[in-house]
Image 1 (cartoon, rainbow, N blue to C red):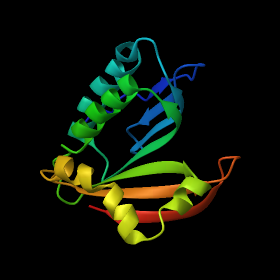
Image 2 (cartoon, helix red, strand yellow; image 1 turned 180 degrees about the vertical axis):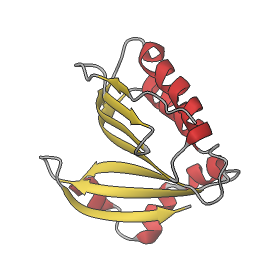
Image 3 (cartoon, rainbow, N blue to C red; image 1 turned 45 degrees about the vertical axis):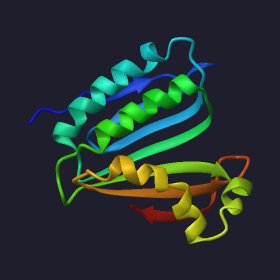
Image 4 (tube, rainbow, N blue to C red; image 1 turned 180 degrees about the horizontal axis):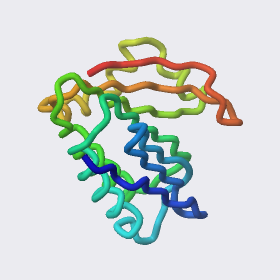
Amino acid sequence: MTELQRLIVEQTVKTPQIDLNQLTGDLIFSGKSIPENAAKVYEPVLNWVTEYILKARPTTNLMLNMEYFNTASVLWLAKIFKVLIRINEPDYILIVHLYLPVDEYDDLNDFDDIKDVFVPIEDIVSGAVSSIGIKLHGVDYKGKIIKETSVFL
């Protein structure tokens, strides 16, 4: 089985740092995403992810540490997520890591509040073969993780 080449997209003022690593299963998006042409940024990423699911790692970590993103970016990230949930291995897991400022994290008071936030996602992942988990990270102004919670769908 041949490995996918690691895909790294350097961060700009309007686009996030993207680091997709098949060897580790880490798919990292960080920074702002307000590109004028979202397809130019995200289409190669979608193509890479489409290949990745054929050779996925037992644990895939989709890390979304996005300060800000526009509607076009959300649409592309949703497409990427929909491809990732097609990993066709029942013993594999996709963990979506979401990084929030600690004050927003604290606004989600208990497990029921957290689970309610992800009810719309449950419809999307209902046909997934692999397990899906969401890990919320509350971060301080320096980006250091202060608190975290896991939710499995």
